[in-house]
Amino acid sequence: MNFLAVFIGGGLGSICRYGIAVWLKPSEFIFPYATLLANIISCIVLGCLITLGQKSFFSSSTYLLLATGFCGGFSTFSTFTAETFALFENGQETLAFINIAASLLICLGAIFLGIKLSSLL
Image (cartoon, rainbow, N blue to C red; front, top):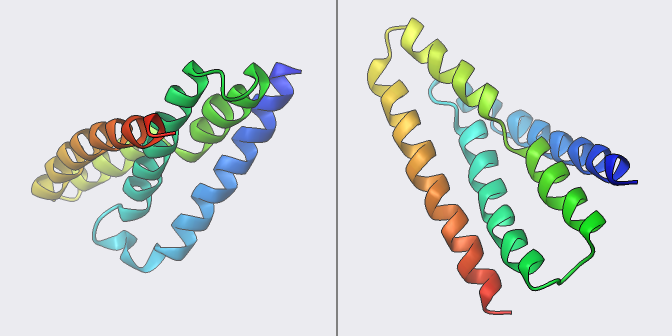
């Protein structure tokens, strides 16, 4: 049953990530905003889920569906890496380093924000 929960959550997360990519497609030629946005949202959600999971707010199956499945399918390290590599290959080193720094710093802050928000419950 746990595998099914992760499978369903991962599919839903992937669909949501694809939706963001379609929505932000025109800006994709400048900077990988869609991947950054998906990763930020996923980190906020995961931060909330971590805190709520520690408070036994939901079952372990629900946690697997949301945290491992949805957040795992919604966020994407491989796409971030490929897009950053493409920026380097295209001679856009500054944008590549901005993408790396923004992704790491903003996503760390997003996890922290999610943890703090959910601790208010």
